[in-house]
Image (cartoon, rainbow over all chains, first blue to last red):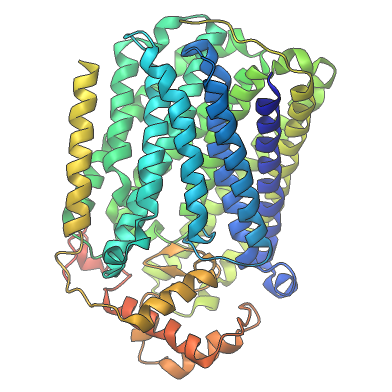
Length: 444
Length: 134
């Protein structure tokens, strides 16, 4: 593995560890703000946690593409140059962002709280990634497998939505609060779709590699679901702003498009039998364990998302911890699990941790069980908040939140389990990265 | 064929994006902001108020939604001024000047005029969607 990719791999693991540590601290600062306010207030911890999580997901998604680029699209002399420019600028900018957070200097908006000028080096670095990637893509033969379509879509749409996310700096967008908020959540919603394209593309690539079956990335059904996902990426962001008195068409379009996800849900149920057979054959592979976990979390979170996408239900769930459950369930349960699976394959984790396999399995089980209780406690807190604020119309905030905070103590405790479980796995991956020289087989 | 479908979807996305930018707030009465509101909005971001508070249910979960706090007749400017200036047990004091506090309140008053965060029960249509009338 080249040095710059090895360093980037370790940076990705550091981001994941930072996400876990600051996530744990944030949950306790949320419950006991008086004890944290002087040194590590919640308003400082939360952006560190959320930015670390976002940058982990996006960085790991790009790392997977970089790792498999050679074997899918080929490389020339300049590919490594663009990769190095991307990696150097990306890492340096993220370090500057966390330095700003350390001094409590903010200026951006939710999830991107850093001062706005730092978007310029991030964009520059992304353009470098795009040049390196699309140079290979243009040379690739015409019939591309689906994972290349997904990577290409994800990289392009991250670029588009990142620019859109920064349009607030043009004063016209700020003349109307509704316009500003609509565009902000349009960009945020579609950006999640963009990184999902990159991550699901890598997941598909992993399935092709471990099953040896190339047809799963070329059949018509897979492409149908790709286009369904792409349609949702483009038009399904409106569920974030159902309660905004913006143009009704945004709400109705989003509602209709989001209901098409029932097709994905039905397809998952239909595929369960095949998955069980596949799981029996492949369960000895550690990376495959993460894909099984991700499959469960896709099922659970898609069901939750489908109900949240009905405006009449959203009226009770919007602004409650059910939204947090969905965000955590998808970022930890789906994104992180897939990324750990794909990176585990790339690092040849099955061979590298032969002696630590028992510890790995225990850590994996601890993370999954804790995450399930963590997720359910957030849903319980959200149901309570929705009931008390909407059905009972309670208006005194502290009074409304009193029983909810008790449920959230369970969330904070199980958060420690999630963090410890994933952290043990990350440490094992770190050690494997030191030894990894894996060359991915050609699947063209 | 795949490229054609992709191209049609992407064209629809571009057209929809342009329409959203131009007409998303068409059905509402737009209240123009002013320099004080703009400054208050910047302070809202610089002090990271969104970490704990929501506007239209979007933001943090530690404190209350502040979309319509300025329109609450039981509260008013002095109430908001005291909270922002001195904080509470849970909310830290941000050491803002009186002028800065006033700008944040101007921003919240402007947000309040943009609409109501809570969707009323009668706005829920039988199809499950909302019909929100300004």
